[in-house]
Image 1 (cartoon, rainbow, N blue to C red):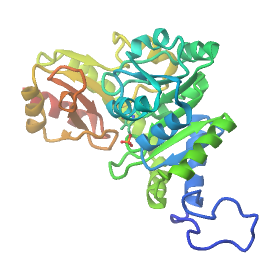
Image 2 (cartoon, helix red, strand yellow; image 1 turned 90 degrees about the vertical axis):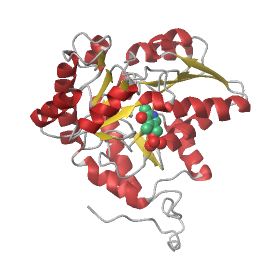
Image 3 (cartoon, rainbow, N blue to C red; image 1 turned 120 degrees about the horizontal axis):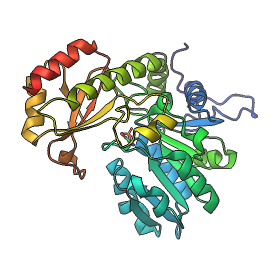
Image 4 (cartoon, rainbow, N blue to C red; image 1 turned 120 degrees about the vertical axis):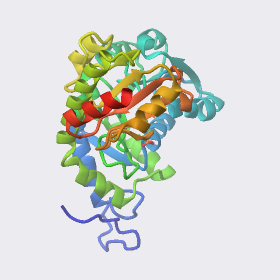
Length: 342
Ligand SMILES: *Cc1c(COP(=O)(O)O)cnc(C)c1O
């Protein structure tokens, strides 16, 4: 794989028809390799990289959500998306409606733009994307799906009818907890051109080195995601029968409320498990007594990590934690978590 190429920031080709690499904010060869790979993974015609997941999401929202439009965002999804919609888009004249993921279709009746997230972060509810896409299509609304938690290795929202995918590559896709990145993928040429134009003019771009790191990480993404999903399934099964655990959410558990739809639209159920313990102290004690668990708010890395979401203001109980499974030996991990739960 060639080294990162930060584009010809200071050199113009004497060939004046050269369109792409005239300046590093427009495109560069490393982005294009990564974008080709992301488009292929998502089943999209094209993809565009961004400096973060939020940069990708907010760029799409600036393109689609204009004054007078109605935008639906998940009330139970990634919290900073709601914050952006409320603090920036609403004052610009966008009607912002927060809807529970379980009620996205009902809330989307007269919407212009619908942003869905599935499985939701952190609650791990699953939205029926095919149903929502048909609903949006019949009403002329644009459906944007945040594919961060599932990654394209877990599901392909475009094949289920979404118009655009937005995602953070900071998490499972890059997988080594050492960079921040995002992307948009889609197959409508005018929509993708408008997003590319927004990126050029607003400038929320990814550094060439980070793009190169994501590209390098993609080589092992399949192995990592497979292992994380297997580890998550095994941990969820153990946690469910542990006396110190109040409840467990994992779309791969046959009796999980999301299992039926998840089985229809996901290839793998992913590496995130939601667990509810008795209190915040119980979550702290779990991490302290464990030799393998680390405390971290990001997720999708190779080490298993725990985030108590109430600390960030999510409407979950004090003892709710999102566990992101790493690629450790599962017997080691189960033994460690069992002893740490006491
Ligand atoms: C982390 C996350 C984001 C934001 O991505 P950044 O790369 O941190 O900007 C968006 N959506 C979901 C579901 C996330 O988990």
